[in-house]
Amino acid sequence: MVYRLPMREICICPACTNPLSRVVAEATAEARERFIAFSGKKYRGLMDPWLDQFALRVRQCGGCGHAWYAQQPSHDQLMAMYDASQPLRPGEAKHEPSPSMRREMARLRRLSPAQTPTLLDYGAGSGRWAAAAVETGFRVTAFEPSRTRTQERHGIIVIHELDDLAGPFDVVNLEQVLEHLPDPASVLSDIRGLCRDRTVVRITVPNLRRAPEGTDLWRVWPFDGSRPHTLAPFEHLHGFTPESLSILIGRAGFRPLPDWRCARGFTLHTARQALGRALPQVRSTKLLVQPFEQASHGAPNNAAPTRERTESLSQH
Ligand SMILES: [Zn+2]
Image 1 (cartoon, rainbow, N blue to C red):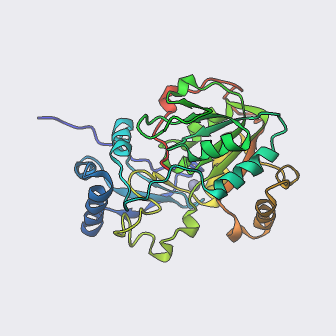
Image 2: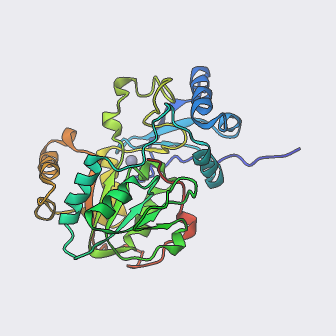
Image 3: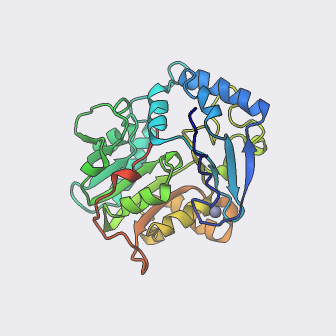
């Protein structure tokens, strides 16, 4: 007979380390049915047996509101899941950068005084953001652990192994990546080691407080039959709030770019940041941050990231 060790349950908030959390969604009979439907449509049934291997359960922090899967698949399981992924609707997969991606990269380019600034697109997925960055004049490195997803493109250095990443970079782009990582705090600390003092790190994650599911967020979890949930198992392991993201970046040694630095090009973003300091409800989960010296920060600058911290990344 094979005995399995009980799986570790993550009870402490991965964003703010608050020990007080509660279960907000778990595998009722209806949730299991929705899970099997999602597994079939999106991953050809690959995740079906996982229901018997660990608990399908979401916890939420009593402090910052961060939500996360209490038990998570292994690294190898996550990689197999990404490899089996297929679009929910035919023709959904896109490969060329959109006009808004190009505009965003042009704004980032204006923040970088170097003649040919370097940009790391961390968790590059199919490479659309990296392609937009090349068009805008960056020298681009795309990091993506899944070899099946990143397309070779002209002018982009594609890296699949974290140990092969060599900084520092002028700009780091983390477009909808952190929510996919089992341990986003460790990865952010590693990225800090790839930064100069004036490196700009752009971070976006889905905002749990503005989820498209609205007040039905947990009622329709984990799948409403048509689109991936804000906490879709198990690509989105984390659900961020503006508070949880803000605390997480501080723990990793980053702070928001001062208004005077990002005003050029990011006018709307700067205005929103300023408003958010007075009205928490307008704060967003898009941040432009830069490194700062922490008295207790353990990771030395330019430290090589560790392979153990590489986990699954996003799909765009
Ligand atoms: Zn928290």
